[in-house]
Image (cartoon, rainbow, N blue to C red):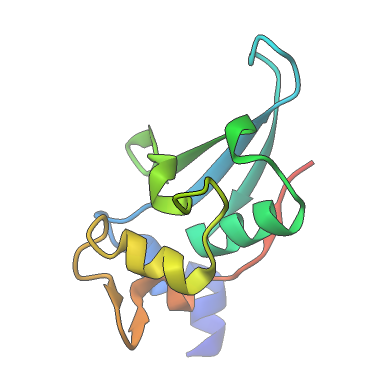
Length: 120
């Protein structure tokens, strides 16, 4: 079963009501037309990376990438009242209503995904 999972990927990648991956775009020019891109299979890994690398939330746009296209995620789900990146536990609580049925007290649908970050 492990070899098959390596070939076809995590089961959660085939659920159509949650994103396939996440993309953070960080502006490198004032006009916002040039940016660096970071990709992650989970929003918690992406937010953790942004926080660890002291990337200002004001400089980032986060996108949920689906098979049909992408939608910008409201960053309020990822930020504290003070405008800081949320911890993983806080993020799970924040996103529970955004992904109904996928984030539970005991785990989430995204658990089978890698936590690696791809980017420049």
